[in-house]
Length: 159
Image (cartoon, rainbow, N blue to C red):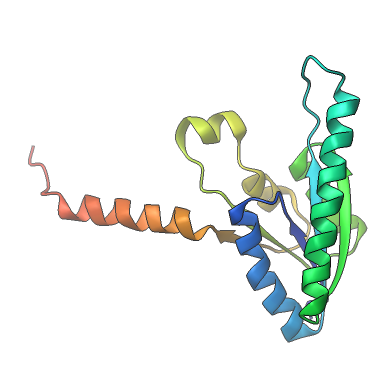
């Protein structure tokens, strides 16, 4: 049975799309959602503490709005805010809160972007102790489908 569903959100379109199947699972299994946002410390010229505090304040407000919206849909929801490396905190949070599944977005980064930023979803899948459902953003899926279609349309090169 799926009772506790951890949903990491970074407030991007992709992470909000991943919320849809998580809500469906929660309703179907009469479970609860754990909405998690991880503030990743960044270091600028201003003290990092100020930047982190601003990010945390913003995230608290966004998480509260999301939870309120979900409550109106009849979905039980708790919000969690952590600071650290996103994939580490997601896996820790899943373990510490006895999550049955993690439902998260994959942004579909490839090439240099993937090399530089890595894939949080990929790292969660590799290190999580519970199942992980990754949801691909519709826009990324559309671009991938178009790229595949374009490749099929090209005549094959003969060597």
